[in-house]
Length: 130
Image (cartoon, rainbow, N blue to C red; front, top):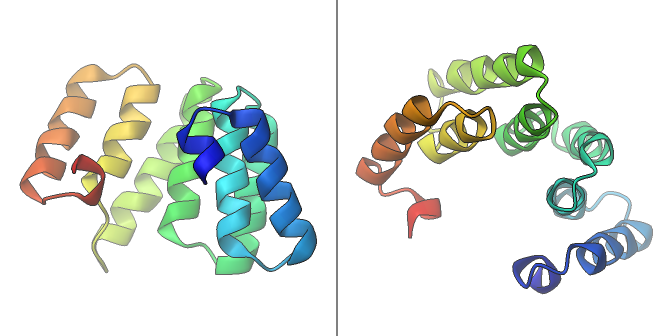
């Protein structure tokens, strides 16, 4: 995680891959790999890692969020919206941080929607806003 936070994305990918090699069932390593791959611009690899995380978690909202971000960054609007819809559907059953919606909208270039969701995230005292 440190490599990612220091913007050393190639190192972050290596760290995540090493963690997965040690423990293929390490859910967070797959999720971390997805985010690191996306950060270095390899969205296809990021999606594959997100799918690996989803297989392990059974479809946790974080997987949906990370995959939605990858699709948005690839400018695959249809798939990004599908993931936004899935997150909204989850909201009917459990808390979903509005920051997740804001990020996908931002990656789609939808600034009004992104800022509206960020306002919601601020009111919710989102973890990502601190």
